[in-house]
Length: 384
Image 1: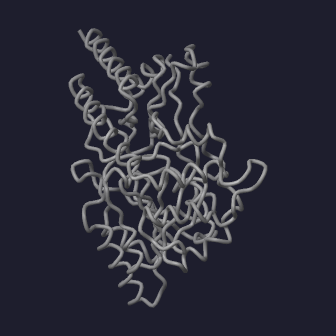
Image 2: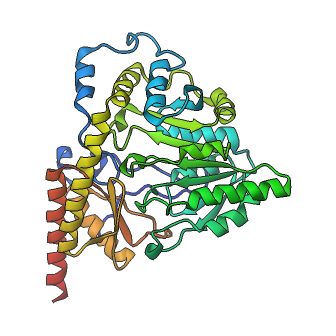
Image 3: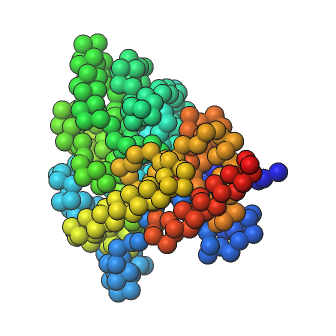
């Protein structure tokens, strides 16, 4: 019997989830050298900007390594304000987007409350909701033919019950942004409904971790919907996931409510220094987005020729549909035995018959393409 591929399981209780296996665990389980393991499951980039290595080599950081970084992250906040086009008082710095999401949950999601999640989406929304002892209101997205767009009508109908709405655009793991105008129209309708009912509109979290790949952001909507919190990160397009730097962009009252929950000094002085310089350099994100887009197109075409058919994507990953969860398990096992780690989904997940695959370097992607061709050839030989 083939071993079950490693996955991050969907939680059923605050203690019912686990994180993805490490590369060392994958190597040990499948008997391969750890340096042959390639992570196609984490949506990270293998090519950090050159300036990161230069700064690390120089040892010239925001403060000495024996000291904490400035408590207000002033230079980093100013750089982010310049990059995103918002006032510095409307930015909150965190240790990656995940810490920002955690702070939002601690601030706005009370025990016994409720949060809406259009599913499928990023698994941490459910984790954070259940950690807060809140109720999850899962609303299925529209199907693949509709680009997995949110069901805005059902979300709007559920908002009177909710303290918080988790949104992600472009969405992970489906790879596409919401159709133009969908989120703006939903926010306007939610605000109208709340005003008419004499209640407070729910907080809306818009996770834009992949926004650089679309070249646009909806953070200006915070002016008309003051309870909108937009989340950004340097983990994806900037290829700096290891630094753990993220931001909340929101109207000042929302930022002020979150500030007491921000840990002191959770972003290191090394991260602050590199992130500040990266945000100030226009070429870094432009070149990275162009590289990913080009490689994404090449990988998509190559996999399509092999017989795998990725859906459209505006991110640094592809979603590939197979005919059944059983076929996915076979493919995932075949990839893992070759040191290639795909993102799989639990049997109860709406994408259980899919794999999510990160766009990586040309050489790494060539290994994936070759493996896909081998697995398809084996399957064809078996079927004969």
